[in-house]
Amino acid sequence: MANRKKHVVMLGSDGSQQEGNDAEAARIAVANQLNVKLFIDNNDVVRAEGENLDSLYGAMCEVINHSGPAAAVVCRKMAPGIEEIEGAIKAHDAIPVDYARKYLTKRGYTHQQLAFYDELKASSNPHQYIGSTKEKGANRVIFGEAVNSVLDGLSTEEAVRRVMVIDSDLEGSTGLKGIHAKHPEVFVPSGVMERGNFSAAAGFSFGSNGERQGVFSTFSAFLEMCISEITMARLNKCSVLSHFSHSGVDEIADNTCHFGLNNFFADNGLMDAESTSLYFPADGDQMKAVVKRIFFTKGLRFIFSTRSKVPYILKESSEEHLFGGDYTFTPGKDEFIRHGSAGYIISYGDMLYRSLDAVERLRKDGQDIGLVNKPTLNVMDEDA
Image (cartoon, rainbow, N blue to C red):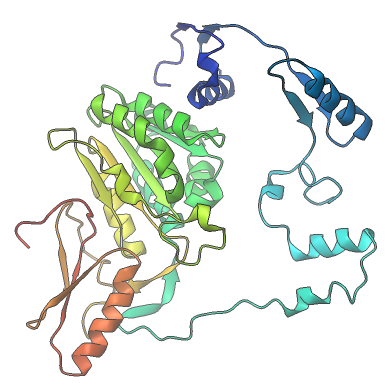
């Protein structure tokens, strides 16, 4: 990725093509016109038109009757018949109600049968949290804005030389969309292939000691599939800034396979391994401060955010943002949000504003409880 004019020759077999990384690497090479030359076996497959039953049935019969491994490639658009999103990437997401009504009406459904759509109402949490703003910010989006702030300070030529941002077809969900719009020169649109994309980001930064940065992002639930690539990047002293959004379960509108539960899998190196740091900013201000501070440092850095928006943490007895103004983030340092003599609650990320609410209510009841924010998850602050 960092030496696109050079040729890379690889000798392989059809057996190695069974590995998912091979297919992902091939797609990256084609999409970016990399000079990768492969010499491997080629196997024929059967192709069929997905919306043509005669074509599809014939292909299925041919595959079933074949003695041995066989494949049928079904060529069809997404959401066939739904005019507004047929064949479009948007069909991967939830279908808008208006589009669904129109489609189902054409299929013979009555207005009465579709009336249940009118009963769908969004709900909200009525609890009023103390110690934080009513205003909320989306940390997963603010990550991209923070990266843009760093890129804004570089010339176009320097940005291209030093930074590559690779997307796993989730730019609208993980904050990379803003980078794509404002700094397309560093943006690499790639497919749903996290392992290959992480490896590409690591390869871009290889041998740079932090001078070059690969920026990678996906959902936290998919961190688990990148463990081997993370290990190899660490052993090769690569510098990758990873943003894993949709951490935890807060307001996850998807099913349980999207719950980001195993973030600490990223911290899987030995004590003498290259630096690995896990960060979970508490609000949008701290997200900006974290990205600014760690962007051009070496090693593997993982920043986590939630799908849900979070309020901004306030200074004690004030309407001033705690992490705004002249706040500077210090990696590995625990932060005292409220001092107390009767004990401390330790928190981080989206739990901080909830913990602060509990602390403030306890303090009103006469219990002098303090609150500590631990934005660096995997480092013990011995001086705290």
